[in-house]
Length: 77
Image (cartoon, rainbow, N blue to C red; front, side, top):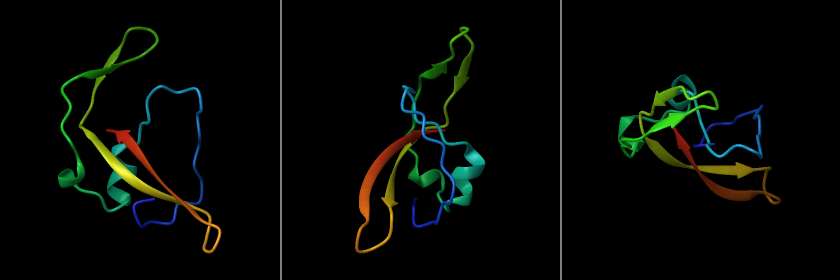
């Protein structure tokens, strides 16, 4: 993920938002320049809202060569 080896990933197939915490964003070596600004907030199930720092598209490679698969995901911070 973003040229970093990530060993554990939680996948929530029922989620409508892909969220990556900012400390994980930084540990992947990404910077503010990788973010696209967003003005809307995320709203939780009980009506609480959280401001987003932005969104970024990140390359994710699953597996190792020769049987790897490259995909792109968009995450919000």
